[in-house]
Length: 256
Image (cartoon, helix red, strand yellow):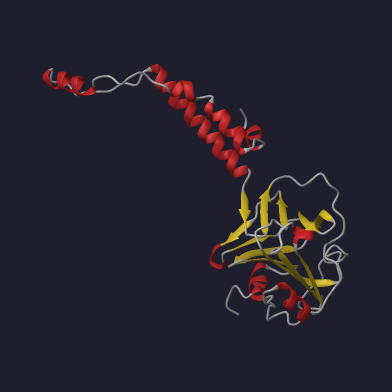
């Protein structure tokens, strides 16, 4: 059975495949090892326990299945950051269109004050970016199926030192989500990086993002760089065309 086939299995299907090996693992009662040792000592030879051919086959099969299952699990790597999830898997079959911050996927812009009041928490505004040029808020059962799930999105227009994100008039966008519903799912085929010193993840390759909106799930292409992290109950996604070092500084995840 190949890694590719196992990686497509659900957890239940993988468990069923492993249960097929159960009959092979049923061994007869163990022999009298103590008696064998005493006999070996009386005969003046070193006691040695040999595995039966059946036991050797079982060990080899189990080791092979474990190796393949481990590889399959790595291929299905999932990072859960609360309301944001990263999945290492092929891109979706749906045709991605536009960008969530360039269109109407996030609804009508509102003021930061209104968003703060409606969100139930104080949205984080990166000091290095200043007051956002656009703010959006989506929340509630109608949008996400859970009343306590809230998404606040902000965007800043491009300016010197903040290059424009392709396909948008903005140089940076920050999405922050409170709640356990997977509002935003990143589908990443290329390897992404864990920034251990900041407890964050960095994606610098084109990928797709699946966004849950009041009108249903929509898929968007992402060509800029993305930094993702979680602090307490909030999950964050910062998108810019900047380097990792500068993105970390904007996010306040490193010393200036």
